[in-house]
Length: 178
Figure 1 (cartoon, rainbow, N blue to C red):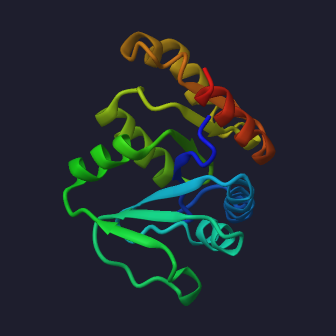
Figure 2 (cartoon, rainbow, N blue to C red):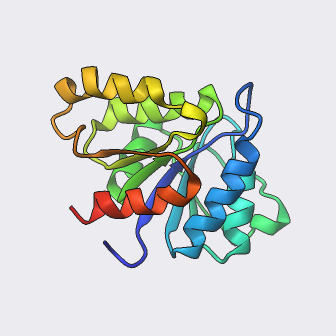
């Protein structure tokens, strides 16, 4: 695995969902920054994963946003690079080009929708780690065995399910070293 892999993180704190998602995002941002990962987040429709970004920034992570428009970020996030790409298909293609691995956090339908639409457009060629905390992605686990594996040839090789934030890094490492 590269010393500082580029991880595209799918996370949202918008809308109804798991009340613990803010804590999960904060813990994940800190944990991945500690391991030296470069974090990239897709930002669309005013949905910015602020808790993830704040904790990663506090640990010195290199972060980039791929955004649909310019956003005014809080002062604490001014060190983050933002690349504005107005066209959605281009944004997704850019994610596919720069991602070494996708990390999908539980919490809201916005996260799952954003990841699913990206997967739909890019196929399953980019490795994916799902944080399955509180069994948030059990349906995806079953769906991946029944549907993804028949639709995308690499799906079974490119998916891992971590049960805790601490396991995310091990899962990413496993996917990127095989």
